[in-house]
Image (cartoon, rainbow, N blue to C red; front, side, top):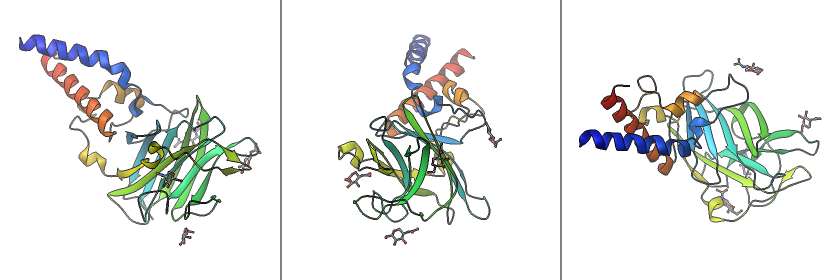
Amino acid sequence: MAAFCFLFIATVALLISPALSLTCTSQTFSQRNTTFANCLDLPTLKAFLHWTYSPTARPNPTLSIAFIAPPAKPDGWVAWALNPTGSGMLGAQSLIAFKDTNGSIVVKTYNISSYGPISESKISYDVLSKRAEYSGGVMTIFATLALPAAEAEVNQVWQVGAAVNNGVPAKHAFAPENLSSKNTLQLMSDAAAPSISPASAPSPAGRQSGNVTGGSSRILGSALGLYGVLVLLGVTYFGF
Ligand SMILES: *[C@@H]1O[C@H](CO)[C@@H](O)[C@H](O)[C@H]1NC(C)=O
Ligand SMILES: *[C@@H]1O[C@H](CO)[C@@H](O)[C@H](O)[C@H]1NC(C)=O
Ligand SMILES: *[C@@H]1O[C@H](CO)[C@@H](O)[C@H](O)[C@H]1NC(C)=O
Ligand SMILES: CC(=O)N[C@H]1CO[C@H](CO)[C@@H](O)[C@@H]1O
């Protein structure tokens, strides 16, 4: 009976795995040498964050990210921000990617201090590098920020918009999803990562992407965690 249960569970786990491959752990980047230590399926706007946090980098800790999301319309924009002074849009130190007036996909920085029209400006983080790609209907922002000090967590905000007018990203929708597109990014998620260590039992998805399965959205995270546990059970039981 126990054997049957394990077999059944393992089969179900295998059956559900294709759906889970739509998570960040199956995403790859066009530059083959681009990898990140962690990734997260963000809970709204079909967005994903990949990141590597280097708290001991000198002179400042660094956070390298790839933020992936489909713009609300093909000529729209995607944005990712840290908010060191609050949790929402006001105070967001933003990176916004869009197709510039000359047709290039650019990333510009915006210190968002009001709900009015935004304008390009410096942000409170040193931006060590930034670039963006647009392919397959999704935009990806790549950036490395210097953080003023090592932090265990930071507030992040993300957003998508439908239009860019004369090089200025236009305001986004007011839908509930937009209003809830923020949370706290646990930078030290390695410590809190699921007990499945990639070194001892790489998940199939983790192997594909070269990413460590770090955090995940609550729902997908627990599904993936469950899947991992099931795989582990299968490994233990079947010895493969
Ligand atoms: C990764 O590859 C790109 C070209 O595909 C190159 O410009 C870049 O320097 C490489 N980065 C590293 C860290 O090797
Ligand atoms: C378009 O403008 C951006 C600056 O906004 C520049 O970095 C980029 O090289 C330009 N692209 C082309 C094709 O001229
Ligand atoms: C961002 O805007 C706020 C409010 O106007 C201002 O106090 C702050 O100095 C600005 N930050 C930077 C880096 O310019
Ligand atoms: C998370 C986020 O950016 N929410 C914003 C959605 O849009 C409304 C209206 O502009 C803002 O009030 C929210 O801050």
